[in-house]
Image (cartoon, rainbow, N blue to C red; front, top):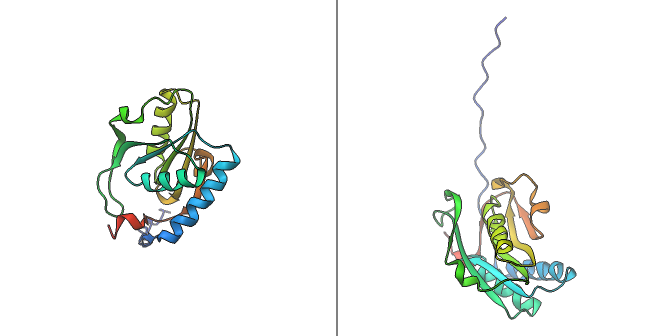
Length: 174
């Protein structure tokens, strides 16, 4: 007897984006600061431009870290919800990092979607001679995660895990 055809799969609509508030960000930064402090204070905080600079500066204040740097790493091709991604992150102006040799560095981004940008940038910091690289994000969107290891194993400090697109207060309604 022939196998009956499989009915087409019905895909549920993706969940609506979650809009975080400044209060949410403040609470998340406090959580991250406490977790980072437990492992020792970093000598430098590096924020991934653009969105990672806001939590990087906030964390630097909580951690009383005066050495704050930035690196522009771009993978998403637009600012809209569920925007497409380039295959690999593009690093712009890596010289902006200065000399990281021998430093304990905290790498910060606002969100890890696929995890590729954070992993790529952490590897780059290690290649530049950082003695220790720890990673921290305000949020992980598990719906987009692409790494072999779960986010909790791939990222040192995560404030919150979500299963949808996150819109941060500095993004407006993009």
